[in-house]
Image 1: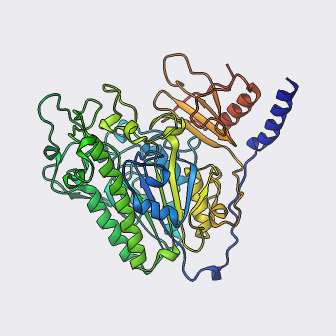
Image 2: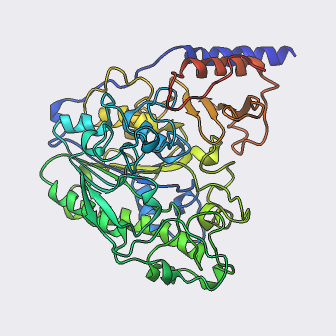
Image 3: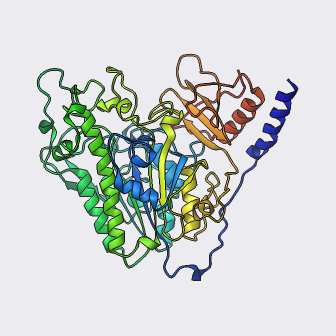
Length: 512
């Protein structure tokens, strides 16, 4: 018992910083440090599992361009998304505010707030400052190509009002369930794409399932990538921020037909009929592999274009995912949503949970950063970082001050550059997620405290505490063992959570 008390005392000392706010974004550069401002390319996959690419352990298919990126830069083993689902994760990324302070904390449709909007998600407010808006005000050309999800066209949260000079892609996440949509958006102009648009959802309970029945004329991801590459070439004479929120490998599983035969036919012994939502496909495993390897091809196009333009040496390239691999299935528990077979690909490796969960499989994501001559090649960092950190990190890299109200994220630029290889964050990481039953989590050092079922009519779930240094799979709840630590962490979580009428969640104020 005496040993336990000594240990708890040391833990409490270690966690005193939980009651303090740190700011680690000092600017050390001079104007002469670089002949030209740093360019930034940020590539965001959609629902990519932590182990879905080669350099993170994927064995079923190859991702040579992402592996090349890792060999030329730094790969992170404990990087976390801003949220377990799309829109709030992107909000944290763009604003640098964690989910306890973020405006957008869920995937709520805009029409539920304002019936004038036919598509799109709840918008960022006029007052919300984004990374793109800061860079744009400082002379950067800014472009986004892919899926937005932070406000309908002509709302306060549309990309053209949040710092992007050029936007091309899907405004609405629901529309992005189809890879062959009727249209895409070019800023506020609707661009027709497919006269035979393919829906993102359908079922085929009986009969032959044929992949060719679900193909339109123009494949949206390839069109968006063409626009992104054109943006790069048009921006070669000035600093730029290219944001690439790809839609792959989010279901539905319908890649171009010619990609399916790149993978063994014997993989797919059963067809998927749409029973877990989205579209049927005769080759679900091949389709998923095609989507992920298409991400790899997109990354290769970007890297090759930077080389062609002689911009690689002055461009920070970041690759990550907005959350973990797609949810577990419902009607067919052998498959995940949309027919994705996450067990076959071991997409989350040993991590618990999928998209929609605040457990590791839902929020721990792959992340690679490359900047030749600055970030040491073939390095690996185990330092915990997350999406809220990107705004201060990129602003320190580009030598701009962060907003006064941006206190959630911590710059890890000196970790990337090797100036401070022992960098450790000062404050905990926070997730306050009102959807999927209502879930919250806080991570400090190796400790992660979670609570679920906060917005359900059932009894609220208990506090769960995990020591991730010993239990990355979150199999052993030790909350009973360290009640003082649970109390300290839960109190910090509550202090870090503002009221949000649009996305309410009630966090119990006492340990019960």
